[in-house]
Length: 194
Image (cartoon, rainbow, N blue to C red):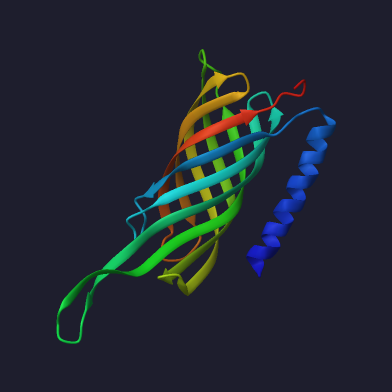
């Protein structure tokens, strides 16, 4: 219930900030990331895929702020399926863990060097960590989380850019309180004149 309330509040605030930015002629930058997770605390903790989508509006020359949605696979523990006669039937998934959520995202961009743009990103938001066994949920935990990372992006063509990010995630509670995520990001920033 608390996560749902936080998400609704985040969406309302994002809509309000979008309206304010639109009045100033600013357009959101869309950032889509695909990558993976690693160094996950707890078991299962072998990591997996990571997806994210962000909308960021410029605050000042070197700062951007917005909302980020994400889905992080934190790992899967495998066991052996054994028949009643002791015959090993092969590997089977025992527990799978994943985190989804929404967060505020703030980026501080350093001065560009040629076509390259480096930045530091901080996130804060609501995480839902779910354990399941072959799709049947066994445990769900809602937690607040903080992320801190850095990235490097390169302008590719016009309003498009591509880059990489590495982010450390810290959750307030649960079995998987810390993990790293790395992603390749595609950035698209439509200028007010487009």
